[in-house]
Every structure is written in structure tokens, then in C-alpha cells.
Image (cartoon, rainbow, N blue to C red; front, side, top):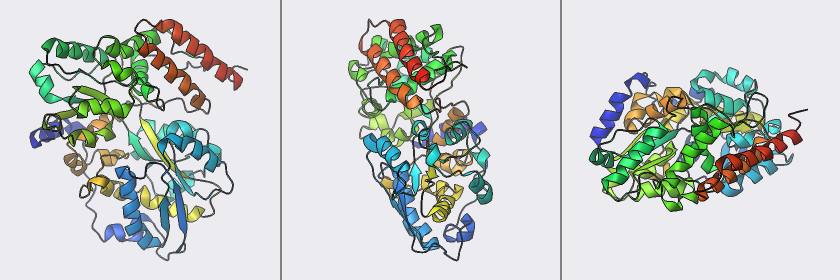
Length: 451
């Protein structure tokens, strides 16, 4: 992103920015007292195993490198990051969490999956209080995802993603359109891009069945329009009149020719590549894709890439999914106290801030942060072109999915239904949503929700 665009982004984010955290000297981040660690090294020689996927993700890689260099030096505790492929991580998570002899101590988990392992996690309420963690430094969606909307803190926010609209400023300037703030405006902008004859797809959506990714933007349509997955009695509500209208709008980008024909099979990464490779003008996805977009080999993409909050519903709200990976400790760990020492360092605002400001190595360069204080930090925003300020604005209205164990059975029903609707331009949306609602109701009834 060029300097002018960075400045413009920052100027528009003044209302979201607070005073930055105090600068941290090298001595501070190597001082055990800074993190509340026991300087006597009572756990010296302890080996911790961290159950996590995707260890090359810059945020995870940076934490691993800094932990080996700093945390181990301060405590004598070493931490090994697992590297389980994301595609098999959910299954491995359930197996290890329920295994009394597991070799793992610490675990990161996707919010939806956490509901099935809560009973195997060490409650962190006392830890949060004793360590002096500011619980209010996390947004509402992240708090909900960490507690399952209960009074128990099962994990603490570690990796979180708000939904952003990525767009080509040069395309918008040439067509003469403004950044859409609603999904309906996005359709209008898309039509204007088509009418311009530029020969670029207006937007790249992703409707394929791939670990529920085709639901991310559907949730935003559904919630923004004013309905939900369930009503107050846990009866399916997504097939009501509002849900049908929201779904019609969601699949309209493919049906109206605004999104590539192949997008009915795309996953999120494949859709993002359409923007990166200059074939699409817009993409709505998780904010961590920013580094990939701005690193595009095409100057017309990298130099003109811009971002804004994901659109909302015309006359409704801009509620979108606040996706979270909490991190917790397995209750059966033989190194419980050492694991809690590690969380003091890993989740400390100083560590989070240093990770998000480390741009010296591209393999460790990340924009991902979860604390509101970090998202509002001026230096952090300056380093990332105002990205964290936009994320903070999105998270103010973000929501989370139903945090019940049964929802992991509901997800594939919804994902397959949305894909079926997207693939067939003549699909009976009401009819297919009704069938899905019947299937979802069976899951809930079998679990005893209607007794």
C-alpha cells in the first residue's frame, strides 16, 4: 500500500485510535517480572507441547521463534509447536483433548470446535484474575467465543479474524464508484464495473464446500437482514422470509455474473487469488489476507489495494462473524503450572504487540492481533496502513456462531445447502432451506432441545 493511501486510511480512523502502549525496551521483554513470571525458574527443563495447526502461519511462527529466544531463556521451559494440517486438525483436536494420556499440554482451537472439548479444558477464570489480564480488552464476540457464552473462560483469544472488504481503488476511481457499505450497494457497484467494459470480474466470492467457508459471508447477510440460525427456542429460523431474502442476495453475485462462474466451487483462498492475480476488483474475507494482497506481484493490485469493513444490510445492520481461535490448557496436562506460565507470556499485550510489529522477516510479518488496545495502537496502525483500526470498527458489531456442541453437526448441513443453491441458478431457495431446516431440527431434537 502506498504512503498516500496509508495516510488517508489513518485519517479516517482517528475516532478508533487510542494512545499507543508504552514502548517496550529489549530489557523489559526479557524481564520475567514484566510478565509476572517466576524468576526462580521452578519449571526449568519442562517441555511443553502445543497442539496447533499451521505452524508456518506468520503469527504462530513469530510466537514460536520469540518463545524459544525469550520465554525459554526467562523460565527454562521449552515449547514445541505441533504442525497438524488444518484439514485433519479438528479430528486430532477431539482425539487428543479426550485422551487422558495425551502428550499435549496447550491447545488452540477454532471457536466452533471448542464446544466439544470444554470438559477437557482447565478453567482460566482464576488465572485471568491472578495474572492481571484485562478481560475487557477483548471485544464481545471474542469474549463469547472464549467462554461459550458461559461464566467459564475455557480459552483466551489468540488468533482472531474480522471480515473485511478488499478492493481495487484504481478500478473504483476509473468506474467512478464509492466503497459499498451495504451488500445491496455492492451489487450496484458490481453492475457499474460490468457496464464499464473493463473486463474484470467485480467480485470473487466463494461458495464451495470447504470447512464451512461458504458460510462466513452468508452469516453476515443473515444477521444483517435481521434473522438468525435459530430462534429463542432453538428452532431453525434461517428459512424464514428474511432468511430467504438474505440467501437470495448472497447467491446473487454468482447468479448475476458478478462473481466468476467457478466461484461456486471456490474456497476462500481461491477467491482471494482472483483479487491477487488481477482478475477481480473485490473480495470479502478474513483480514489476514491483507499481507497476501499487498504482496501481489502485479503493481496494479499491490499499489491500489485498499480495504474497508465488510458490508452490512441495507436498512439493517453490519453484523458479521468474529472468527476466533482461543488458546487454553488441557486439564489432564502433567505440566499445568508451567503451561499457565507460558500463557502469561504468550498472551501478554507486550508479546502480542511485538509480534504484530515484527516486519523484519516476511515469514513472521502478520497483522493479526486480538486485544482492543493493540487494535487501537497508533504505531501498530501506522505499520499496517490502518488495518487494525478498521478491524476494531468491524469487531464492535461482530457476532459469533451458536456455541453449542450440536452446531458442529449443523454446519455441514448449512454449507452443503448453500453450495447446492449457488450451483443451480434455478434452485428453489425456499425449498432447499426448508429441507435444511428439517435436517437441523432433527439434530436438535435428537440432542433433547425440544423435550
